[in-house]
Length: 69
Image: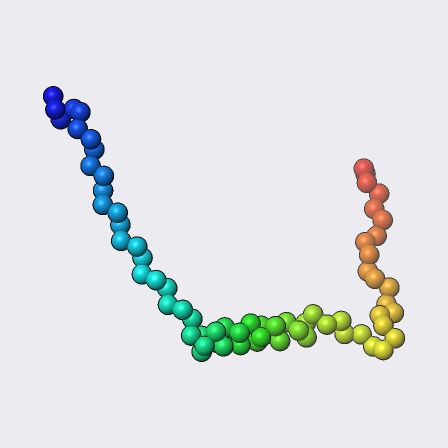
């Protein structure tokens, strides 16, 4: 009957994970260079390529449609 009233065993605390090493200067420089390269890559695609007078072409919009036919 004594087994019925015993406290359950608590498992031991797990060991904490090893600390993450701090980034070195080379790693930080490499990450910044990657970010800069990505910014340069999308730079030309993000520009609006028009002449000095701007865009004189009318925008292509949808045509009117009769609904319900």
